[in-house]
Image (cartoon, rainbow, N blue to C red; front, side):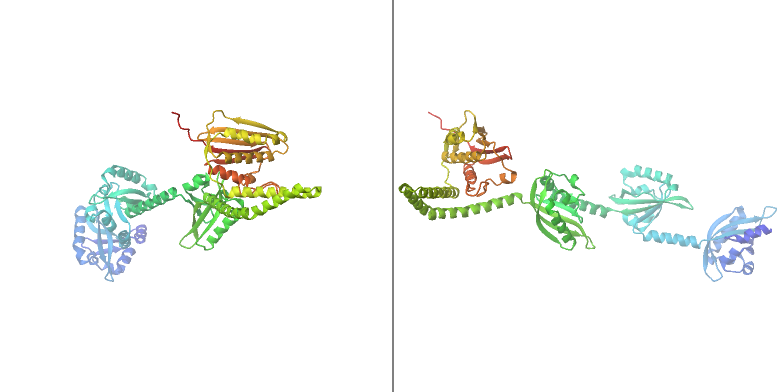
Length: 601
């Protein structure tokens, strides 16, 4: 053997041997010795058949005969015996060495150790079989070449029923053309793709039922060409869980959105994550406007911000829930009183994840509660007033009578002034007691059809002299042809007198008094306006409260407008007030119309 070929021969990782036609080994390289475990000298004393297990000798002899007969190389897999008695799987390429006459003179063999490839193949199959996912392999034509146990369980086929079959048999009929197109496109680009993108599809079982599945595709190169390894996961349970979860979410959404209570879901920092319809209706903000914003930046009045933040701190500190009230400011600036109940939702580590706040708008309730408190106070006042009128009225009348008697008898001017003061103060006390009685023992109105225009004229006539001396002009706007009101004439006159007196007091430097009367649907609307000093909003809101007055001590009881409001409401009417500081005040009284008179025969 030339020296240069001998170097190649010895350096080859594959075992190379040369034998006579009868099998006597004539030449081997180092790799051949390492493969079999025999030394070179031992091998040169052996026959090639000595390396073949008994059960494979016939196979080896057939291959040798075929090579000698046809003169072409033959490749085959076989086991070789090693010196230690073990066997090693090999892949042998046998070809004939011919002489000058063209006849075979010997046999050469290139032997490749298959132990590692077989071990890798076995490990691959073990991984495939133990995979929790279904695994199948297809070639470019879509023919199935490998499936694992999970595929059998998922699709209901035996392995033998799937190997060699088109993969489209596992796809519903209506999706097969689309699936084949996807496979062809994937194979066309598989050289440059590391992993196929997972897709939600449907499979069809042997019994014809369809089920949702998720597929991951991976191209792999094999000795037999490009293949596609598919990972198949049955996601029926996941889809069912998703549908169940979605139904629960839809149910919760429906409950939250139709609930009358305000429901706000916040993160641990107070940012809004959920804002139901009741919140939108109460505040005037849409969900889109408030999402992700801090609750105290939008709705909480400045003096309550720190209190709300303190609530969150207590919740983060471990308090499971708390209840409190505060004001919420709407988009239009209006304030509503809300009663809140906060509940904390924590994650698996116990950290605060969400705060669910459920609130009730108690603004109207608070107003009713305040009105009830006033009613109870008025009832108590009525009892007190009745007792005072009885206990004080008689002695006051005696004192008044004696003072008037002495006033007529005395000629002393100093005595007369003192007695006149006594008479004046007794009359004032009597007036206050009468107002208390009117307030506490308001009699039921004796309603009949009355002409409100006539009452307006009568009231102005009573104040004619006072108006003339006060530089006050009177403007009267009475709609013609008004029907009568259904009211107690004396009580309505008392209402008008009180309102006119208030207007005159509001214009000490003069001004304009305007009385109007017009029809509004089923009511007559009486307006009493002045151009006096007006009232700020905080006073306007209290003018009908008992004992509230802006007059100096001793010049007013604070019951006049309270009595007026009571009379109007007992008539089934309403009274409102409008006022602008520096421009004047207007009271609007609405009294129901009278019943139509019976027709004349």
